[in-house]
Image (tube, rainbow, N blue to C red; front, side, top):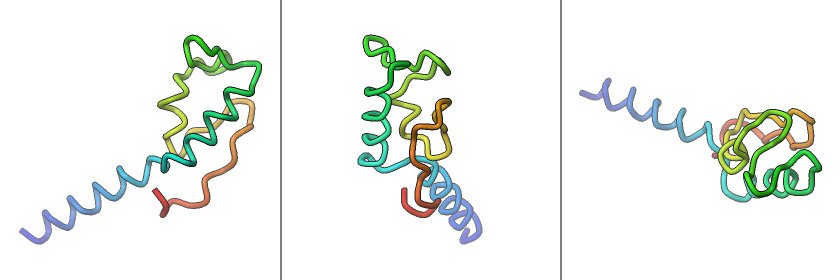
Length: 77
């Protein structure tokens, strides 16, 4: 039983760690909103075609124009 709980805890931590905190994601969205490649009505990037409100939350996602700051590390989700 403990082994299953340990695996579950590890899995939940890994999933949670894949997402950024709201302030970090908001900062990414602001960068996108100031970019000429951002399609405001659709909220997508014209270069990668990603939906920015979702992509901005993903820790390991990258801006195709290299405009986002790199997340600090994998421990602050």
